[in-house]
Length: 198
Image (cartoon, rainbow, N blue to C red; front, side, top):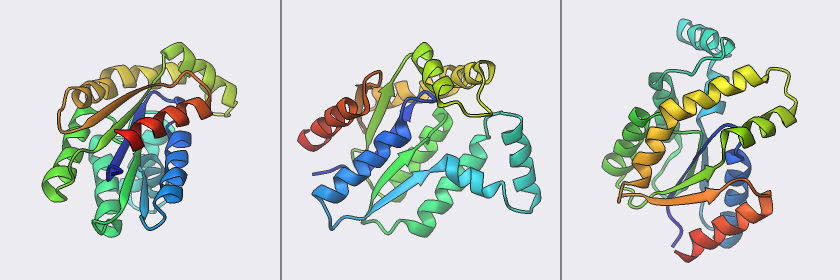
């Protein structure tokens, strides 16, 4: 049976969004009766900062400065998303959440204690810093430069990696360590083989 929750985590540029989208399409193909909720905390924050209120303006200042948003805001975004959208029947695909160990533990309370979801799957797309930098620079985005990218990757080491290791060693989760330094099709094939055959 397909797990009810998939958490995609990895360095910037590792392909989380691409692989999450491909998995969504694969689930819809294999289990057309199942609904899928795609939870993108980053997209929710980008929408939030367009609002006209003090909190949104503060979040936009943080965003424009290139700093990481506080866990408080991220938890608020995905909590409200789940409150409004999750009926208990859908498969949840989370992309870009959590971004810290504290946030991972908060998400754990939601999945386990609030919703009683057992055995969520963590898809760790494992890539090196150098691979990530090359990939992000190749995208050619106007706001991407090597200095900013290196800063984001440093956040991964200090903030996100402790969450990755917590998931890896937590028997409540099924942890998949996927080599992300391959082409999209190879990664997707390995992921679907592991997910639908475990």
